[in-house]
Amino acid sequence: MEQKWPQQIWLVRHGQSAGNVARDAATAANEFLIDIAERDVDVPLSELGMRQAAALAQWFAALPPARQPNVVLYSPYLRAHATAQAVLQCLGAEDMLAVVSDERLREKEFGITDRLTPLGIADKYPDLAAQRKHVGKFYFRPPGGESWCDVILRLRSVLDTITREYRRERVLIIGHQVIVNCFRYLFERLDEEAILAVDRAADVPNCGVTSYQFDPQAGKRGKLVLELENFVAPLKESGTPVTDKPDIPAAPKP
Image 1 (cartoon, rainbow, N blue to C red):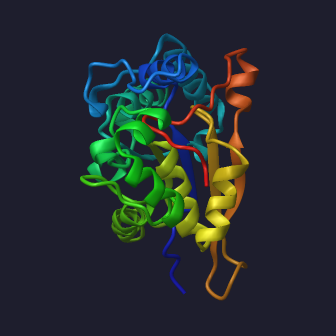
Image 2: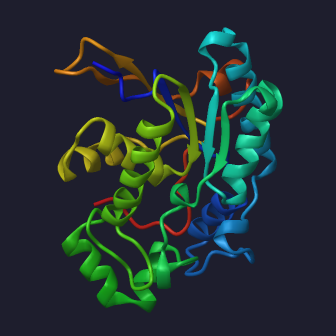
C-alpha cells in the first residue's frame, strides 16, 4: 500500500519575538495593554530570538544530509519567516524540494482581544472573559478572532496538501505555539481534554522541536509516531537561553 505521509515531520515554534518580550513587561507591570506598535504579522524576532533561530539552524545543518528537511513550510508572520530564513541559509534553499510561505500556518487570530493582557481582557470585556472561562479555550472564539477549532480546520487543509504533494519527504513546519499544539491534536488524534492537558503541561519553547517519524508498522496502514516533544537541545548545546512565553495576547490556561 502506498505511503501517504511524509517520512519525517518537524514542528517548530518561531524564536522569541519582540511581542513575547513586550508581553512579559506588561504582565510584570500589571498593565492592561501590551506596548507594541506593529501588527501581529509584523512583530520581529528579538535579539535572543535571532540567536535561537541560528542555533536551531545549526542543529538541522548538523544532521546527515539524508535526514535533513527537504521541504520547508512556514507562517508568513515575520517572526516565523525570519526563523525559517535562518534555517534555509544554513541548509541551502536551492537544495529544497519546496519552500512555501503558507497563510494557513499563521498565528491564531485574536480579534478584539489583540494586544490585551489577561487583566486587560477582564477589564475591557468582562463578559467575554466570563464566557471564555465557561466555554474553554478550545471552543471559545473572540469577536473577530478564532477558536482552536477554527485553527484546526485550516490545518486540516494543510494536511491535505502535505499528503498530496510531500509523501515520503522530510517536512519542516515553522509556525506558532497554537499551530504546534493543533498539529499535535491532528497527528496524535487527540480530543479536547487531551490537547488541553498537553497545553497545560508546558508552553511550547521558542525554537523547540516536536517531530514525527513515519512508522509503517504502526496502526493498520502505518502512521506518524511522536519522536521528539518540545526538544530544546539545539539551544542548550549552543548555550542559547530557552524561552517559552505564550504569544500575545494570552489568557490563563483553563
